[in-house]
Image 1 (cartoon, rainbow, N blue to C red):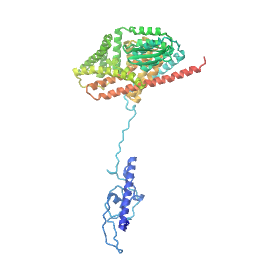
Image 2 (cartoon, one colour):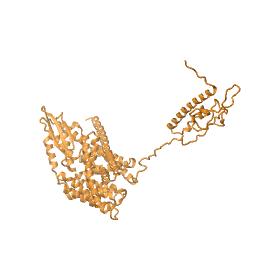
Image 3 (tube, rainbow, N blue to C red):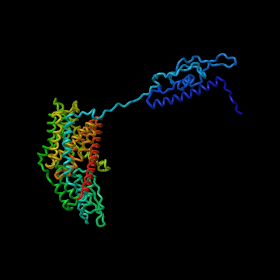
Image 4 (cartoon, rainbow, N blue to C red):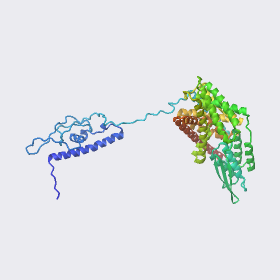
Length: 595
């Protein structure tokens, strides 16, 4: 049988004090959690005695979790000892967490606490450390774009908008209903599909566009169950003809076509997609186009290389002397490229490395003099047309459209081209050394109008060097100015990386609109100079060069280049989406107009 322990008066008081201490601990913990959650000091949430908080006895028990020591006094008349507190409270409690002197707990204090609310006093134990992220201003607040450049960009775009609107209204309409179906019982269309796909790959088209063109050619020739696979190095097409499966495989990527050849190829492919040419006519025309000589002699192409180098030196912030040095080195790179064009493909890498080595050697030797010309423009501008900017951007477009094999292949090839160029520059630096340089300094020898003049000079140089049709110059300049003007405004509002997105998104519908004109070049012809103008490859060359030279900070530049390429790819995709929306609107309007 269990025995019950009788609790005397002092024991009951002690038990009540222990319970009060426990409640005070729980309430203090809750107050601390609330303070941490709200970011306020814990003392601001501590209850006061007047608000139903713990009494003096519970506060003493909170500081001393063990049972308090009692001071016995003389017994009273009943023989029961009484506990008198050694110190009576004379004022309100300041805080539930503030330490107090040990005292003997009593059921009720002698003095009644005041209900006045104390002023919280932060202490090391009650103050919660808060980490605040500094405010980030908008990109326009920290932008270094000159005001005059913004004004000129707005004026250029304002001048281009009515021209584009007029072109959109005057452009001829075309749709799938204009396609002529040519039944192909013998599967001869497979050869045309292969030849057209190979020519488009050599022109630099992405594989999505190539596959769409081959599918249209198959449809125009009556092949309802044709399948096609396009890769940067191979074209495969297959179709069932008379109960048998026929397949055609063609190796691609063996020849890089010039701009005038790309224009001719686009005409042939467009006719084949609409069924306006037989398979034999299409194959013969493609073969003749591949054998076409450039419309300009080599000296004129060399002048084009000089113009592009000088223009890019202006855009990259070179001085007058730096522009002249870049033009001189550009003439050497152009002459070396014309001489090495006849070499087999396996020796083309030697041309790339040699050009980079000679340019780097010349710039680093000149940098040891007291001449003030700007190193970076002189180093990048002569090699700009060797940079794989368009290839890297096309790889990002293919990766974004789930073409993993072709996108990864082009990305690896473009990165290899950057490594070859960087290797030549690093070798030159190791041979002669590099003095202390200020690579961030930019010059404006021609004032705010200089870059806009350089855009026109750059477009003319590309037309001459890459052998585009003379009638395409005006269309190319239109796309270049829209791309550069949109990039300037994008740099003002969004910063450097997203400015490439804005420029690509603006130039894509313009290039598609230009391609619809009777004398306009295909979109690929006007795209390519704009890719070089945005210069994602130039940033990558700087980053790869610094990494090969042992500087880990170049990794930041490489990441910036990757972000720029992704931004351009997304801008192109957004531009194509906008073009598709406008095309559907035009088709609906044409269907609503009675014949």
